[in-house]
View 1: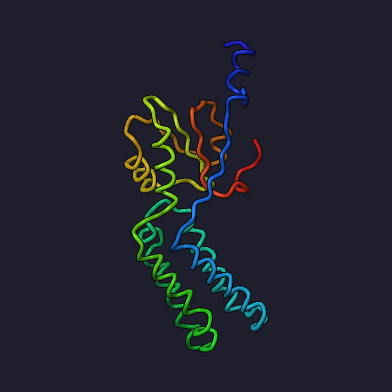
View 2: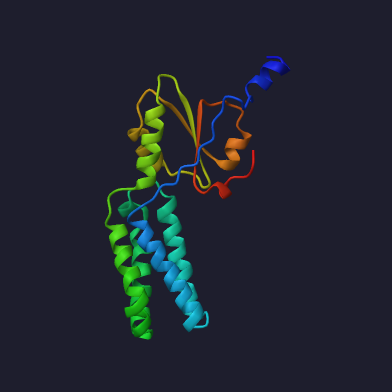
Length: 195
């Protein structure tokens, strides 16, 4: 392959870049409740260390749920779920007013999320790729963190069987020399550097 043929692979004239925002009816109330908790501890509790620790835990749990492709009820392990519940109980004992006013809605939305058997990100990803599907289509799915084996199997089962799907982290995708018909970046655009 000569240099000009190689440049043809990178012709951006016939390429399309789309950004799709995926909303979750379960995650949005949880995110809003966490934000309200953050503002409350900043305003009324002067960034109390214990409450700040709980806030960080809730943010991690939210990020795990928002970035997972598993059904929400399988995205968080039992230990993490129990850890969050124990923090809620501690707040109930130490800060009863805060618990009633702010933390109880977080607990209720958390319960609703972890009991949900769907995942809007997974559904959107599979629907988007399946609509584009044609025999031999080579698809790359790129994420910030490595996709688990369970998530890979779930995605492959949700996609049409004749598709050729490869999974990458951002870094491994940049290093890979293979070309694809469709590249899907999963996550916030700021996760991925400029190409």
